[in-house]
Length: 107
Length: 107
DNA sequence: ATATCATTCAACCAATTAGTTAAATGATAT
DNA sequence: ATATCATTTAACTAATTGGTTGAATGATAT
Image (cartoon, rainbow over all chains, first blue to last red; front, side):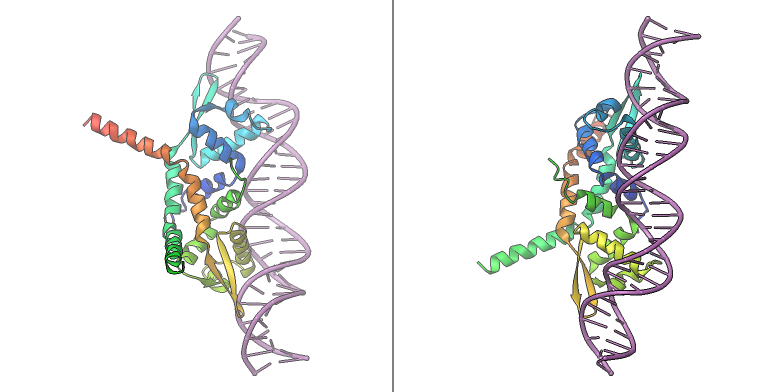
């Protein structure tokens, strides 16, 4: 049922706060690797590794322009992750319905 | 902006295929720890550890009934994860809108 | 050709993870 | 009190992760 997809890599990527922060910033607009790294108290090599993990998960891609490499986000992969969670939507909606029912019943 | 909260644990949990499979099965209905473990070629101790990780992420809870412990899924935590991804929804929807526009323009 | 800027690779380290087996605990039944 | 069933804890291992520093590569400018 599960294609052993990228879900390991996608969720593995999202499990790290630095990587989530990188994604949040890159979602706003393309940044070079250097710009991505700037705010963190980390070596460039460390950030480069984070970017590689995000690339493996297909959450970002890089394009070279001259000396620099621009990091851009890959929307479809987020969609894949969202669709995975969508499978569970019924769970919390049912639960919320239950709550509403409770609230209607005992005021 | 980000509560550094459970997202580490939630996505960390979801990064493992055994744990995703456990969640999928438990979503259908409560199972005892033993029932959860049965299909996997893993020791009970290993499955117990997976369950502890899922508990720490608040993706499941356990309730004891006599000798056994029943594992049930915790819907709200899935909602939290879905809401995190929701932040990125614009990304792929824009992209899809772009595609639609393209399709309208060059038929 | 050489220097410089941007980024990655290699080698290493400490902490964490996913698994094992064996012993310990919790809850019930005899 | 003891035996049994269900599950967890402890102690250990091998692999992976997130970080470091220093050397290597890629691309441009001189």
